[in-house]
Length: 162
Image (cartoon, rainbow, N blue to C red):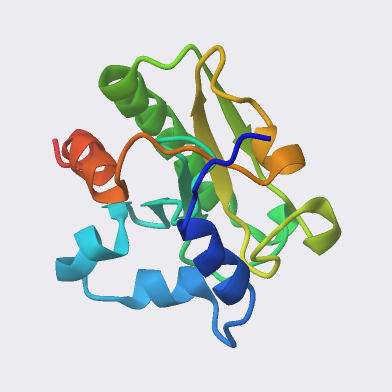
């Protein structure tokens, strides 16, 4: 059997889901001067764009509303519209920086649907490449990240400050 070392996984297993606070509300409430260390790429009027701390692929990003809502039906139309506009901008940024061959976008609503943060909806945006191990993480509990999160941040943040 091959063993791939992924030390970040232990942090996820021991910390994820144990907080009494909402990670999205906490990140959004923080001072914008700390956006790099918090991995926030963009603060728009109703949503913000943030790198996933435990990515499936390099460039795994999320778009979350500032409003603490769990369901799409609770989201204001202008917030949803802005979320999709940010998704377009994010795709352009990922395309320019990484040249992916495809993308997965998804919202998991509810714990049984796979939501790690079930009470604050967020849109996952994942760049994909042929042979990138696809869903190995689901069946093999393994991820291989070729790039540090801050390096990813530095590559993408400029696309949102134009």
